[in-house]
Every structure is written in C-alpha cells, then in structure tokens.
Length: 114
Image (cartoon, rainbow, N blue to C red):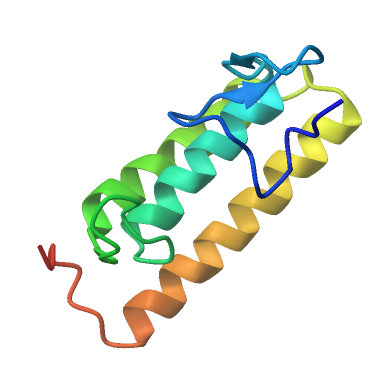
C-alpha cells in the first residue's frame, strides 16, 4: 500500500493514492479542512512557495481572512468537536497567529510581491 504521506507521491492536483494505488481526492474531514485553511494562511504569509513559480508572496489581508475563518470555526464548533479536533484547531490557530505577528514584526510590507 502506498502511504498518502509518501514524498514520492505520483498523484498531482492535491490527490492522494488510495489503498489500490489510484489517485483520489483525500477524505473530507474536519481536520483536513483545518489543515487546508492553515496551508492557505501560511501561503499568504509567504511561508509556502507558489508551487508553479517558486515565489513566496505575502498578502496580509488574505492571511488574516484565513485566520479569521479558523477563529470563526473555533467559535461556532465549540462543544461539538472531539478532543483531538479541538486541540488541533487550538494549536493551528496559536501557531498561525504567532507566524502572522512575526511576519509583521520582521518588517514585511504585506503587499503582494508578484
């Protein structure tokens, strides 16, 4: 069986291999959605390069929007998540907020550098 975390994954476009090795979209879970929002925030903070150009762009308004969406999810799902989901969301929010502050303090302008 091919691991979905295999760095040599033959699948593109966000797909992962299933148990038979076919490229499929990953299962939709709350945790996967949180990680997707986290990835979006990190991308807009310039922490993840554009996969096509290799450029790292900073857009504070889009990063803030992703963070605000995570905060909204935390507020609206309070008491409805299992302990793992709740802990993950709390940790992701803490981490991305700290990265946002660091990026601002490092003197980045927040303008798109494309």
